[in-house]
Length: 170
Length: 295
Image (cartoon, rainbow over all chains, first blue to last red; front, side, top):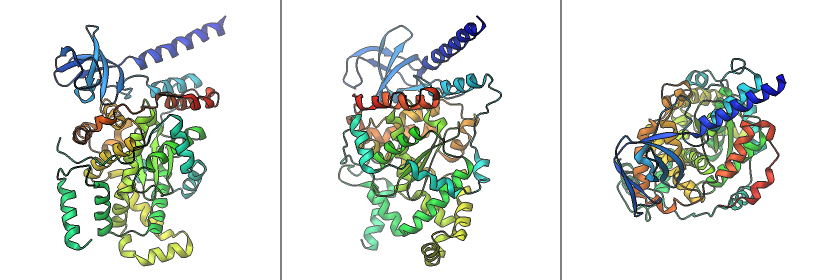
């Protein structure tokens, strides 16, 4: 019975983390139009004022599929919104980092026993070179044919002729 | 290329004149200019890169999950194969830190923290970040800075000779390690970061990915409290995410990158891999599903 209730508690914890990780909001940084598709000549669904709260459903290319507070959904250019700030940077959609953190604390039963592994300026300034760790990187190195086969599985189609893009003033 | 032509090329490159992107290969132009200023021997670059990478790996180690490391090497090499230096011995690794950062070292080393990987949503975002780091290597940003700081250009032939004779020179290691500690804690010139952003998205697009992945990651970074410890090193070494978003989106618009916005994101494959970090017990159960993915 006791084990059963612990199981339920863990399940609720994980479901809670998944829920928290998948609800995300953002706000518009310019006034614009919600459109019916992810392209600039799509029909207009509704005007959207600056600073409107939206929920992100998905991203496709330079567009976010969003839902307004009114319940209407449609597309906005990526740079017309800013994600609402969070302490961990869970962003939108599934936050794998939040799930990782809750999984880690769940495994040990306590968040206090497993510290977050940091990497700050001081760690770099005090680093003692580790040439052996560099040599060990070779074990994961791939050959071009392996990388290509994996790309083709997705499938990805290479477009080697795409030109570099110019530096322009924002 | 004679001196006058080179100066002209440098002038165009530095002024960032809106030359037709399709007719001028800006990447090659940058490369040519930088190489002409500081010629770098390939062996010397490999040695400096090993020492710089050793310094970074002295601060934090690669994670143990081989499947994740191999995955990042497959994606990274595929993106690098579409750069101007496809034949370098490219090596990629995920580092055991929950903070948000990524690094490049000369000769083809690219590192990304677990904290950054787990804040992404799909393979296109990973390709964009790796493309940024690969561009630092291709444009020799760290190499030139380390050579200048460690005064290796003055050691010149002597250093190269010792490297060839002994395979590994401790004097060079000490100099490069010292210069690396400073460079990787203070960061490159901001313009190098903006350049790596816009070259990186092109490499991701050439590799077949949705090129907006890097912009998406920068938007996620913009949403993290800039004073949080997870952002300390990144903020100390890079322009703000907001400035990078503004510069990159303007360049992408000018280069009409929306033409490639419907290229794959690779969300399913990415999620199956990161689950192995989030839920280690599931590792190894569904490897064959990669073969079935279609978008």
